[in-house]
Length: 150
Image (cartoon, rainbow, N blue to C red; front, side, top):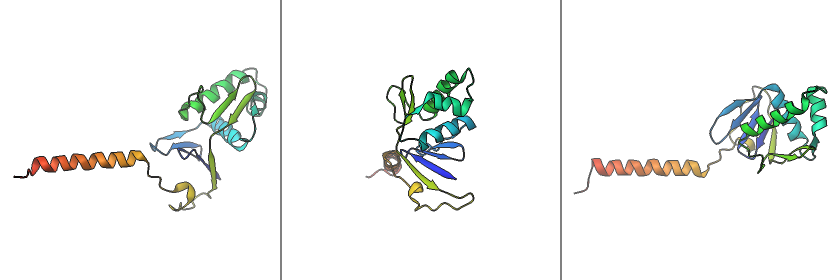
């Protein structure tokens, strides 16, 4: 099974999109999971609308509208603005291309995850340091109010 680390922000694993900054887990419906995998694995090219429609909707008369809605849902779970794409670039009336930075790692089911593994490295971001600094500042203020210096 392949997992994909997307821009070091999301982890695509087991039909879930995990936001690594908030730990939010979004279960992707099977079709959305298949579409995002298809775009990611074909990221070196523009995937045409017709190709996606034939692959996932078997020439259904509503395939065009369904594809547009599916891409819109993917953008919503990725918190992406279609006007300023970070993951999925639209080529009007042509198709889509995955443009987000991705890393892959093969992980066998039930295999323990090693923290030193490249995809699972702990990434200390500014949010962690800001939160820790604020907590420390509040504790110092409380200490000075409870035990004032004479």
